[in-house]
Image (cartoon, rainbow, N blue to C red):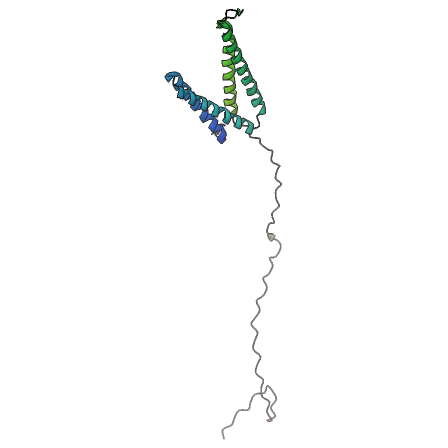
Length: 195
């Protein structure tokens, strides 16, 4: 079974995923309930997601992703300011202002801001959740190690003989007394005659 590529996530990547899930849930609750405190919690969760995602991306050395996210963030801010400016000009009630701007002229900037914001969040989410590739380092081929082998006697050669066991040293014979009877050493004693 092939292991999933998403299992070895870093802690910061897991934190960014949790913050993204919390942001989505809180945004849905805010849209349903229209409560201010839910909106504040949604913004806090969104800020936590952005911080965790940036920490993960920079920790993985994905600087090009951070550059793209910065560009889309700049586009989001620029389109938002242009939208507000166009909307303000369309609803300006000053009698001496000369403008032909309508509220329809602000719609493309609104769409551009929304698309750029979604692109920023999507890039941050994917780049922080996708683990980096594991670099496989080519291992050098191991040379077989020559192990000393016991030499076996060839069948033609005679087997070496074990050393002969030494016989226990014999005790020296006690010295024989030499007498004046004139017997040579080693001669038998004469038998007694009964007479």
